Amino acid sequence: MNNNLSIAKEALNNYSITCRSIDFIGQSANIIYKITDLENNCYSLRLHLSNSETIESYWTKQEVIRSEMVWLHSLTLDTDLTLPSPIKNIHGEFITDVNSTKCTLLKWVEGEQKPFITTLDDAGYVGEMIGKLHRQSSDWNPPNLFERPTFDGSRILQSLEKLKEQSNAGLLKVGDNELLQNAGQRVINMMNSIERTSGNWGMIHADLIPSNFVFHGKETRPIDFGACGFGFYLFDLGWTFSYIHPSFRNQLLKSYSKYYLLPENHIELLEGFFIAGQLETMNFWLGLPDSHEWLPDHISKLANREINCYVKNESFLFNGIPYWE
Image (cartoon, rainbow, N blue to C red; front, top):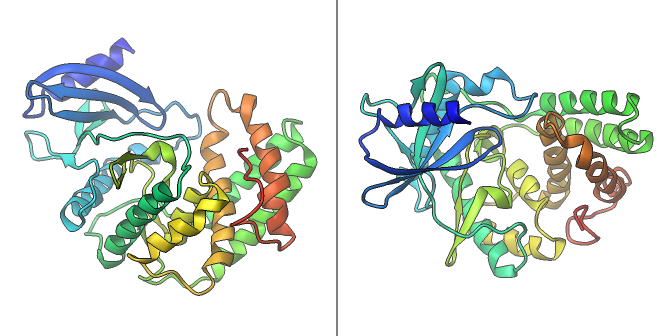
């Protein structure tokens, strides 16, 4: 931790701010510090170091990180969303390298975090925010040398392989794994059958769950774009629905559709992308040091509720008990 703090202090020397305090916030895909300057302006300083064994070195590539900053900069200019706008260093660069650790500085986004979306109003605010993101993305052309991951079936295949290994090692129930494998293959087939167009495919946040947005009045503010990449817009919604109760999901879609059009068969597709989001993120979860303590129970509930319905062609988007209850 002290070494990381030294890196953080060294990184700050490359920015035109006078630091008053540095507070450690946490570590997941990155190490985060909250920086407060003498004028009480707040910033998020990120050290691009992960605590997951399965995070590939890809995520710390110069061009990959810079591309995230480029999209955030464009979102700042093109939308009225309050989000973590990137700050360039004194050399005019978005990335500061300290002892081979890449660091980025962004504006701190104030607001209230909630573990789940529990009201119709909040669901509506979230829908508006996602709709604005997708509207900007559909009109935006990435510049040359822009490099971010693609959320397609290949990532789900990786998860399915790891889940099979866990099941063979006796760490997952065989029946749960079989359900996940069947659902995963169906989701991959669905994704492969959709023609990618500017109307359904582009840059997405890819991790719009309650820990990655905050509420401020009647506004939802997205944060942590570290997982952003190219994908279907419905993937964003499907993953968000994993943390929104079925009774609030319709309100979110109503608000979303004021800013971005939903396809006619969106309910059927969203149920597939709900499953896709769960399976895709297991790549990350399976690499966390404590995953064996909670992931098997999570998978068991998911398998016996949403995934079981999906395999049986039973709709679950607006009814039933969500896996997290």
